[in-house]
Image (cartoon, rainbow, N blue to C red):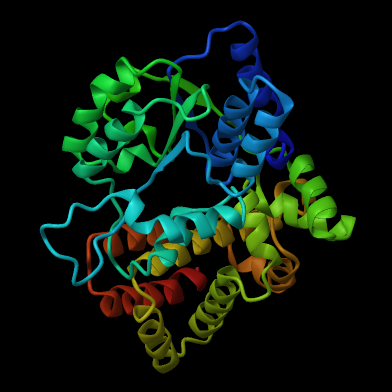
Amino acid sequence: MNWNEVIGQEETKARLMQLMEKKRLPHALLFCGPAGCGKMAMAMAFASYLLTSTANNDNTKRNAEAMLAQWQHPDLHFTFPVIRPTGTSADHKMVSDDFAKEWHAMLMEGPYFSIDQWLCRMKAANQQAIIYASESDDIIRKLSLKSSQGGYKVSIIWLPERMNGECANKLLKIIEEPPQQTVFLMVSEEPEKLLETIRSRTQRIDMKKTATEAIEQALVERRGINEPTAHRIARVANGDWLKALEELDAGNENRLFLDMFVTLMRLAYLRNIKELKQWSETVAGFGREKQKRMMTYFLRLVRENFMYNFQNPDLVYMTQEEEDFAKNFARFINEENVVELSELFTRIIRDIAQNANPRIVFFDMALKVIMLLKN
């Protein structure tokens, strides 16, 4: 993998190269930044650079590049959160290698992915993925081995905040004093959840949202999208390449959420209690994580419809389908109800996260929307 596969982020690329040129590469880097900005892609590209930069001849470098093209370089180790599948013996110590096949398949599709996509790969259902204590022993064992290629050994830890306490504490010493030419690259979505003792042993690399222009260019060059469509998608993506890819998927989840939002608002305006009850029953069957994603989407649409009223295209970030609906609906989201609607949807996310009964929560929400639309 080379730097060109990372979309935009030239500032971060330059910073990493500067560390190498000045021979100030820390033993542990912590990549942070908003979702979809390319943190994992950057870590993988940098790992590839490290593992090829020390090659002492062209043949060795070509061999390293060939192995990295398949993500099977012996000096590159991945650590990531996993689940304990139903039926797994309690004596079995779960490690990343238990899902090596699924992980490799995902990497081969590209360096941009989310925890939701990974959970789907593992068929996690409602299980939470974590990095178990046994993982620390596996990392220490792998990194204690001599480099097979005579250069760097690289350990990429994806979502280190999901390490349980025992695992994190076991890794403290090796992160602080790693074997020679060993580099840890941690990729975190929520660095504040990492142990302070882990954070203090890393140099933090904060990445910004991917520039809209970079996403637009990538859509045109990599996906063959025409420029006007690419421009609109890039604006909606708001720095998130994964969101841009979702917009390209004709069956993406957001289209379902838009349909649910449109239905809710129309039924609430008509005060159709019977159909709203059916609507809430449908949503109750989505599963809690999907329900939270839907409500987050609803929050965004409330904001976008409110801003649409100002007739300033630079303030609005909507797909064509969303804007088509907003043309007639936006006037119903105004100064009198925008705050209350936002607070209502935020409260629903909290209630669902706290395992409230979704049938009651969503039907009650639908009734409140009736009143707020009539203000």
